[in-house]
Length: 253
Ligand code: NDP
Ligand code: 8X3
Image (tube, rainbow, N blue to C red; front, side, top):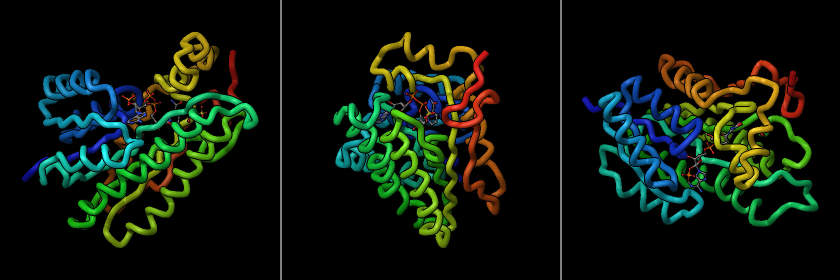
């Protein structure tokens, strides 16, 4: 019997990378995706050496429908038959009031967080339907539950993930496919470096004075959700640092 396969988008850093490592340790073969080819190659070697699992790397920009389709179709039939799809690739770009927002930032967030998630889901789900089982994990955010000033477009994209998670669950329940949304609060990854366009000093300050979540913390929640008995589905998980009471109330010492 072949091993179970987890397909993780955005595995070149942060939550996606940590989840790939944790699920490999759990015995899954892994498909890892992202745009940074060297990072994918490095993670493949690490998983193979440390956990002895099989790994496929797919280097593509999830904003591009054709690249996404071609990447998925480059897999053999065995590898296309995935058990878990982790829709993790995403980003915030900029932190501006609506009147100052940058069109390019908005396109990046909408095209990645909403359209990219939809493309890969649409392409991968028929394989799950064929075998009448599967599990989709969408990485939402506290920003999909609340909004905060200057974050309107990012929050809108994560509210879309919230809506899509609920709707997908309704569409797919009859095929035995589970849909879990995992919504973290502040996680220290490359997220803020990307949001502030490479201003690492500003990014670092986001996490001053409190203990944020780590990528591994979120990965362990994902692992918990995907390793429960088949008849249980955790629909929606909000996971926050202890010091963070809401999207914009964080107790800093
Ligand atoms: P990172 O920046 O560390 O990781 C983001 C991942 O997404 C990278 O692997 C990146 O790969 C991939 N990615 C981004 N754009 C694209 C693209 N166009 N095509 C393909 N892959 C892409 O951040 P996190 O690990 O923190 O973020 C992961 C998810 O968690 C995101 O959806 C984010 O919104 C969400 N989240 C993060 C929180 C946080 O505080 N950090 C809190 C709540 C949710 P590459 O650059 O190689 O393409
Ligand atoms: C990332 C967390 O609070 O910066 O989704 O939006 S937040």
